[in-house]
Image 1 (cartoon, one colour):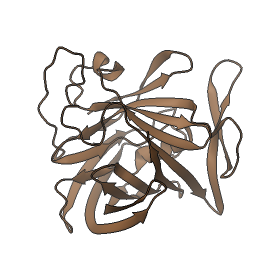
Image 2 (image 1 turned 180 degrees about the vertical axis):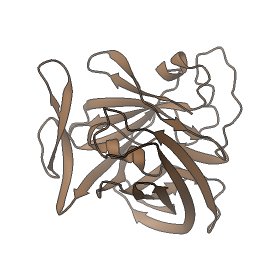
Image 3 (image 1 turned 90 degrees about the vertical axis):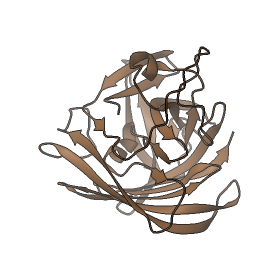
Length: 272
């Protein structure tokens, strides 16, 4: 669907487009008809129920590597670039990414301006410090309609590895026991990708199974959510995602087991 990743640096007030050799294939993912308008509104936002303008979903997260439970910190460099490092989960440094956020763009954004055929709602993915100040911002897309919801993962810095795990995806209406497939042609490893090494072209062959409904105690409240188990088979190993979807709040909990052996868990903390 989108061969480019877009990095939006709000602190610097400019956008940098990063070319990445990734092609996400639609196949059975339903994309609703484009709604033509003269108000500059994204033409695929009109039927959204979760990813709507002026609503931000804030997530707590943690990373488990070996015996360590971690978050990560962004480290600004003298030349204006950024690196990152793992930090203990309870680290409160101002450069520590304490929370993650998702916010929908109501108007047409940089992705559609660059590619008018882009068939997704544009969303900001925020990497916040403890005071909910964005330390880094990604710009990417989500497909949401009556038939399915499909979301690009966070994939900057310490979360880069999520590019190689199943993407959050659910078919609607929910049918317990149903299965569906999706695949992603990653291609050959590009120089900027450091989380995992592979040789040749990599493809994720993903299978999703709807397991049932569970009650989750979240910081915002206790809710019912549909559990979906996703497995991605690749030539370099297997990764997985257990996602929990609620029709009001979307993907409220995501548990990734990644090709590098790490586990990354994200849980909805609040909605603004």
